[in-house]
Structures are given as C-alpha cells and as structure tokens.
Image (cartoon, rainbow, N blue to C red):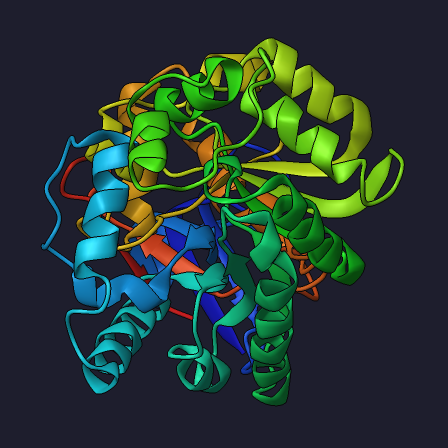
Length: 395
C-alpha cells in the first residue's frame, strides 16, 4: 500500500480539486481511497503540486516522430501537406522506429496512460504492443480517385490484420474530406463503424471549408493542379458533408464512438447537425498543432456552451514541437483563462478514456481504477499551471 499526498488532488469526479489531500493505492496501482489529510506535515510522501490521473492523448501520429523540427510553421494546411509529401520518407524504417519508440516512452513517463494513435503503416505496431500505455490504432485511409477505393480498403484490411496479430485494438478510419473520394470516405467509415470506433480530421482549416463549401481556395487549387479529383461542392460546412457520407453506411442515429479531431472551424450549425445524429461523439482539440500550422485555435467558448465532450491530443511532431500533454493543457488554460484547470483536465483524461471505452480503469482517481498518477509541478499561488510546469508519472 502506498499513500501519496499533495497540495491538490484532482480526482476528476468533478472539476474541483481536493486540497491538502491524499490518495492510497495498491502495489499494482489500483486506487483504494482518497481523502483530506489531517496533518499534511506528517505525510511521508508529499508533493507540492497537483496529482492528476494519467492523461489520454486523444490524437497522435506517433509514427511521424522522425519529422521533429523539420517543418516550417505557419504554412496553412496546403503548405503543410506539401511538406508531408516531401519529407515523410526521408529516413529509413529503423530510424523511424527508434524515434517513435523514444517518444512513446517519453509520453508514458510524462503521464500518458492511453492514446488514440493514427497509423499509415506498421512501423509503430511492435513498440505500441510492448508499451504499458493502452493504445487504439486508427488505420487511416487516403485516396482521391473513386476507382482506387476497393484496392485501398483491401490494403487497409491487411494492415489491420497485422495490428490484430500484434495484440493491438485497431480500427480502419477515414482521414478527412479533402483527401478522399466520396466513395472511399464512406467505405472507410463503414470499416471503422463496424468496430465501434472512428476518428476523423474535421474542420481543421478554412482551406478545407472553402474547398467543400465553394470549391475555392489554396487547397482546392493544389488538388486540381496535381490532377486529383476534388470532393463535391456542397455549400455547407465540411462536417455536414461527412455526416451525409456516414448515412450511406447506415441510417442515423450513430451509436458508435466517433472522434472529430481539430474542429478549428467548427460552427454551431455543424455541431448541432453532428449532435442530432451521433450519440457518442467526442471533439478532440490539438491547440499547439493548430497554432503551428494555422496560428488558429478551435472555438472553445462555443464548444463549452454546446456541452460538447472535448478531448485533447498532441497531433504529431510534424506539426508540434513535442508530444507533451502538459504543454497542451497549459496552452488551453493560457488562451482560455475562463476555463477552470479542472475542466481542462477532464478533457485531457476522463473524456478521452470515455471515447476509448476505458473509463472503468482510466480517466479519474476513483476506488477500483488504475489510471496512473501524474504530478504537475511549479503551480502558481492559486494552483494554476505556469510556463515552468511539467508533468511526470509517479505511478
């Protein structure tokens, strides 16, 4: 039995911390109980910071870790895609695996207990399978030409079989509206929905919105100049186009767990349309990635007003300087100071665990769970994070 005390303990049963409190855990990390310390000075293991449950990185591309520090910032989505195409395969497989293994270990040590990870190949499978971190692997599909749809889906089924054989939970999933033919978008969605999980890049940039709504903008021009087919022009937000393609799989409502990632250009019209048909929809934000590419952030005020289930991800090292969840939390708190730290921690842990259907084990510090315990240090005098704050796993 281990008893850990701290200035604050965020159980995440609600947004408020326990002050000068303790948590008792079994040797295997199972939480026994929490409470308020009678005499904080008598506690043998005390931390002057906040103890929180292990984070859930709700959106990552860990296989792109070899791209750290290689991308120009502020290029917009079209420019970012150009860099991906140019730099993605500039190193060998062994170096890619070494780099992603280092980042997975770093995430675990900094407190990430689970991850929703995007894969376009099998580079990360063995490393994820051997990690104590839980992952669900989303095998992501691209393809703008309708005639390629069947071959791409068959390839993805083979990659999923490899993930299954490695012992990973895996789902085939679509990338985004602007990289897929309508046929592939529906076919990939059907594969993901059949497993109960789907992750989708949604409304990440204005370029994406312009392409779907009016057929204009830099992204549309790049696609056409490259001789690629472009999606139909709908006059509506791109999320509503995605919903329309989902209804080709089966009629609404959708009870499957759907993760909509980025949401920088989310509107109330689009959010309401999704809520009308998706019964288990989660909304991942990756603030540092959005600043890196577009110098933009999602409409957190709107998302909170609508009561959306927000989760937090890091995206990849092609669009971020680190895979550090504490930095994402600090970014959100700094840019949206009206949001309590406890609420952001719910996004960064409990909501992600709910999306992954792991809330029986992860996401909050409650008796019987094994969420992992993470220390966030260097808090200010009212308990908020500072620029010096870092996170590290203590259980």
